[in-house]
Length: 533
Ligand SMILES: Cc1ncc(COP(=O)(O)OP(=O)(O)O)c(N)n1
Ligand SMILES: Cc1ncsc1CCOP(=O)(O)O
Ligand SMILES: [Mg+2]
Image 1: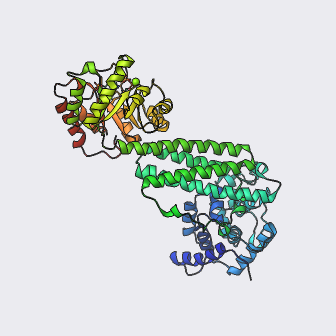
Image 2: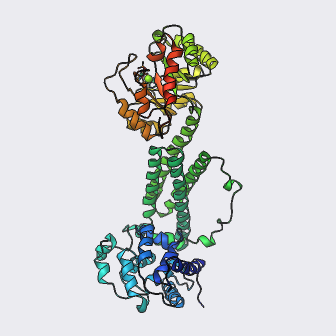
Image 3: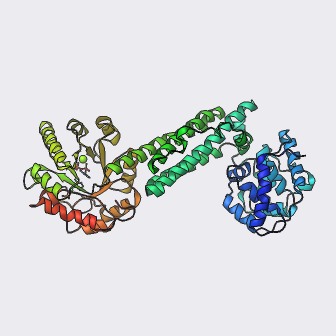
């Protein structure tokens, strides 16, 4: 009677399912391997991924391989048990030992598996930390190393004798702890936390990609996932695998009350950002048990998640607050044909959603008085009010937002003045500026200058190309500006913009309501471009 683990029992049942699925009358060795790989979090799958194999590729190759009929399952059990006794002093063998037994059960199959990277020797070395190449499986199940394996293109197999026992040479020395219980305990936390962090990052990536349609944030999360994978590779697989006992994990049945409640995709993102931070903190702390390097690397990843959280969470709030804002006007009293309050009233009637007070030379006391007036008039008109350049003024006059250029105060410093509830806009002139603004926590961006402007002189115009690039890049509210009027707004919309900011086209118009209406209808006429500004 063999003592197997539930994972092995599931694999034996799964092998029959694979045989049926592939239309094979005899049960073949490949069917066992396919069944073992069905459990993505199981030891065999983790082991193969650790050595750099793609599970999809391995499955595809196994599915078409004409592998030999399997010997009686008791023979496989015996080989796995003997291996487990020899290496783990435990007759109760686990799925990884069973995988080795299956791969070694037939010389032809062993060679075929080695050719696509699943060499018995290579897997065994990782599981046993042994630097030598000789398999310790019983001779019947462990034929000599074949020619085919030595000639493989696989980097792990191409020069087998130069390879040490793990893909990351030297890590065992670093990670080996003198107390095996401490090693297993710490490794078990790391194994679970890596899985948790990887899963949370995947959920977040899906949110950025499919819910936000945000290419830049999606790439940021993907990079983070790769950073996690790179950190995980610094730990030898045998340390993690030896510690993996999901079936005996007391936490798998304990669920918190809120576990199944998610009110929106944004809520899913927030929960998973927290989950990612918590797992990284756990990784960082327990990683320190194995040395300072891993702790430091994981700490850097955790800080990246905080930045990402700000971009995703603040970004979502800004997207919501500015969801319907399409037409934004920069007001300078001297450029208006009549008074500011009349201009605001008329323009708001024509559909202006946001007004910015842009007074570059007004003395502070006058500016604050003016800003307080504009605050009142914009509130009456039901529009948002932003003040240019000056977070201090924004705070004093209770503006809805402040706008900052590349040479103005940083978002971080402005945030300290205006607090969390005030919108911060940032001028951007390139994709690099745009990416930085997203990570800095901007609530919206200005995109420009697009065309030569009567309001401000420029010597460089990122133009419509930048409008196009920006609309493909990020989901933060973005207003194209610079020389935009009724004559060229169509080109801006065609380049992907759904929001614009203008000054002279409305301030200097005899009929600001009509001018605003023309621009607004150009913005709303076109069907929204997917991922457009
Ligand atoms: C909505 C919007 N976008 C860009 C700007 C330009 O800001 P900045 O580059 O700081 O130039 P000044 O306007 O301060 O001269 C803006 N004001 N608003
Ligand atoms: C301040 C500023 N920054 C980029 S374009 C611009 C002025 C926009 O005004 P106009 O719409 O009159 O060109
Ligand atoms: Mg400025």
